[in-house]
Length: 185
Image (cartoon, rainbow, N blue to C red):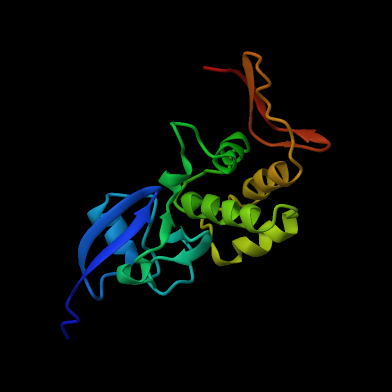
């Protein structure tokens, strides 16, 4: 069945985009194939794994279930779009600092989901973040580090790099320290 082509205009990572797409093309396909945004990953194709997560108007969406034409007039953010002026978003920084990136397949979607949680609920708790992450599956077991990053963010802990030449890398939890001090570069 031919659904026809659509002219679609939407904002992608803070830039206006205009393109013609097949009426049945998913946002996942457009983001990966047209724009080369590889942080958006296709795994299950039915919206249960979370690896295709993007933010649309600030809400997390499974891009494998959304047609590109449904993005018309909306703002889409991928993990690449969290980076501004060459600087990682505070969520991405917390993930790096806490070692929440073992295989990194799910991490772009996880960072977007945590970002959406914190944006929607400025007073979020770790439990709130855990609930938001329920739709994102991690196959390699990085959940503890992801929750460490969430804890760091919701407690508004100061950055390990306070202007000194040493930066904290790895979990820094109450009662134990498995992090490393490394020279900032």
